[in-house]
Amino acid sequence: MYKEIETPAIAKKRYYFKKGYRQVTIAQKDEVRKNLMSALNITRYTYFSHLLNNGIVDITMSKYEVITHILQKYGVTDIWDIVPEDQKI
Image (cartoon, rainbow, N blue to C red):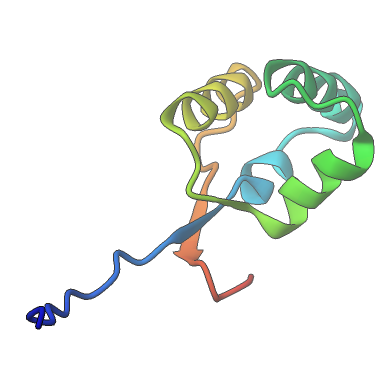
């Protein structure tokens, strides 16, 4: 009845900012974490840790820009690892 149209799905990406977070000095880690949590409206350390270690799937442009801006304030330039959703680093 209906013609089946097969179109490949757009691959989802997983965005990791752990690479950039690791470049911050130990003395700045708490401050950076608090700034990131505040900007992303995160109240629990466990959820922040989850995002840091598991990445963000289909990140919004606003989140991408906020994380990038905050880490760049601390001199970090190489921030993101981007991989297919089913792959972890």
